Length: 158
Image 1 (cartoon, rainbow, N blue to C red):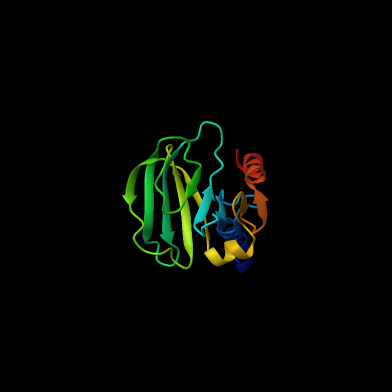
Image 2: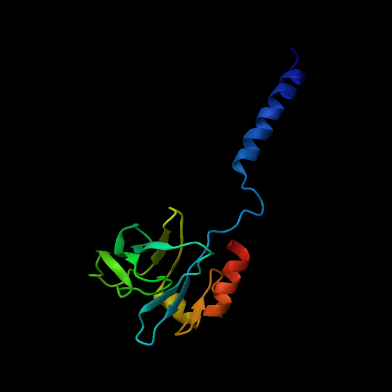
């Protein structure tokens, strides 16, 4: 067998291997949660749900170590507006907030169907973006109203 025929036989394998490592263009980014600050400086979270979705739990973790610092579950209502550290609206506090929020934190939402999504940030970044009561920082770091955030998520993910 010549070198040329060996190359021709190996070329399809090489192409398939490289193609498997390249992300598909147009794959959506994970769905974000909106992050803002309450008047008292606590982090507010808004979760835009698609029709039929229900929240099972909300977890705040240290982004660097993935260690959970607060977790609530079994919302008594929609559970789509959360103040980090405030368990009102949730039947179960799985991990009480006993330490300050980590410098970089991740808010992840688990749905009843097993899927999940979330966003990571810092309190400083949220404040710098101008996210405050009624205004939230989206995945791109832009500030939007709660209604705008929900509309964008519905248009892109639902």
